[in-house]
Length: 147
Length: 133
Image (tube, rainbow over all chains, first blue to last red; front, side, top):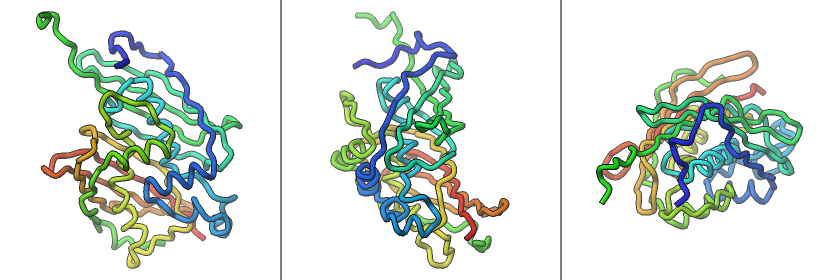
């Protein structure tokens, strides 16, 4: 398994960015998988009548992208301890969004790492901001356990 | 404006049975397909097992949130343990605040998810923004 080595993480380090192209099909698939079939995500006429430019992606789909960028970097999904952020803008079908992040801090005692995150669209507008993720690495294996 | 007397109202989901298929459907939908040596749900899958708590709030006829004008404004999650197939998770959501800011209404919803042994799985905090029509 290719988990990240805690010792090699340094504050300021950038995470590999993650790019996603959002489609109507993906929004429908997310609605089915999550159970969230709010018509603002599925029904173009309803969405317009609610004052939106058309159907919009679920905010939680964008947050799932940010989640994936962090867990892809960590190498394991179970290390994530928290994930927070603001849905700063709408994501529409056809948008290309890019998640980026960097290491804000690292604590050798608690083996916790704090990551700042942002998701932008193809115009450079932030659609998810003030994102913060925290990961906790398992205790370091002691050399005395070597067989 | 939603009546502030509903602050404090809570909603509980039935136990959500986590299956491999449900986790894989979620991974496919969000495009998070990396295989770990053991299948663990992406942490944001908390929105799937807890979804019915949100749904109960949105469809509560007495509280009557204007869901046509509701968008998700902010979300916070803490994860106490990984989620795997076979888990039975119950989520409780509580409406904790209704505030007015300009032409918007801000609704805060706090969630706690626990397993079959009543141990914490995750907790969350959602802020919904309702644009006044």
